[in-house]
Length: 473
Image (cartoon, rainbow, N blue to C red; front, side, top):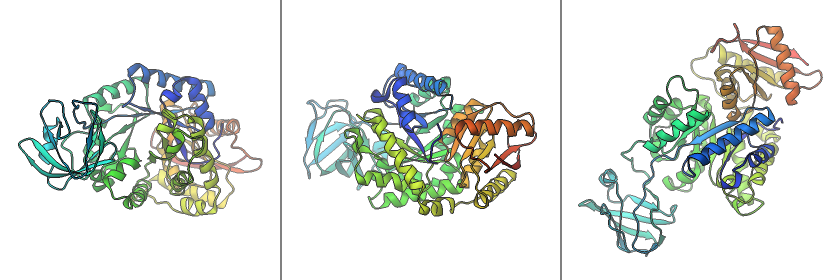
């Protein structure tokens, strides 16, 4: 099933999409990659979700991507003597290290290192930012704060501290255990939460190991990550813009500007970029989205993003397949707009250091501007050739052929790439035959229209893209 769009759709699996039948419906609605959120569910739940994706992959005969999203460190307050406490605007409230149950005056915050980095003026967020407290002082292992916006606080809620560098690793013991499981079942992408600098990416890559083929997505959700954005994007394989988290870290009016800054940095470095959270939030409970949500989706497409991630909409919502279908329809319509062509196809950059792969990718783009290409076929072992072609955002769709199933699955997340798992070509003549058959099967061929093939000679040698050939159907 060929997608009539370049944008990719990532659907999070959960109680609303837990079976292979559910996964099949999401795929048929337009999902290309499936996300497993390690913050929810147990090990067997995760294993069954992964198995469901691979079963559907086998049934449809097309590579599907698996994305594991690591939970990362979570700062949570302790419990209360009663079920929740109502904080009143203007009252004083303390966070200490006593394990005793809390009340309307205090609660445990069992992280000594956090107490050491807080200072007067820092703002603490509870209940997803609905309750705000300002730090007045820190003394004797106690944080004294004033409630800015009151409300009901439940036991064990997560506390967020924007614009303060947290003295902790982004990779927890739970993450390391989850990563080992993910590698054992062959996840294609792993997303790292609460990244603060490039060292967090290096620590995760070390855990994966040099032989690992799993790619890393840096989740951009902290102000510290924005300060180190260029280095983080360089160290990671892709970046994910976590919009709701950034809305806590930044002023409201800064979020859309920052989103575009992240997109520009990723496009400049040739790294895939994804947008996540609050895309179609109303569709958790309703069959159609709000008009503003459709505009959010359209804006991401116009920006040239590689993928949009649906989370609660498909994991817990009442209309998971409908939510995917909405993204699919909006993306198709936007990509037909001449403004999209001007903005996305007309805006690209090459790296400062250009090799044969980058030169051929630029030639593909130029050829697509001059000839009515029906597709570009890229043979690749590691995926680097397809990534390089996708980087220049050509007008022709990209057929990514790889003899490695891991590479083909990974490419399912990349802008404009239709992944195909195939045998490596032993000769140029065989290559032409294989490409044509794969393109015809996928619905890319058109009568008497040209197409382009890029590959490396000798065949099967990674990083040797040095061949471009124009052929006709």
